[in-house]
Length: 135
Image (cartoon, rainbow, N blue to C red; front, side):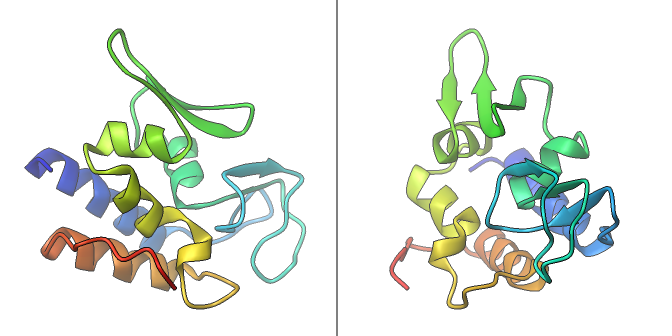
């Protein structure tokens, strides 16, 4: 992974630290993006997003990375990916690493918090892990 992509991962972590849920946009790792969604406390909001969905909404990713039918999609002249493959392709990490970082089923609790995602991203960037996607 390049230094630029490590910085992009840290930018996602920093965005999560700064984000405060509102009635317009709330964090929820169970959905890429859901209009009329609910946050992790079950409160209704305009849009609920996971870490990647929120990064797309906040324009951290380039225009070639967008949510299509509420699923992350990465499209360039030479690359195309959907969901975790899109994340992996853009960040230049393995699909397993993308799953490890951003799949809510790979976290130890049923409700994934921003703090858990932030910690995992920062640990990953410090020392790329041999992916262990088992719970």
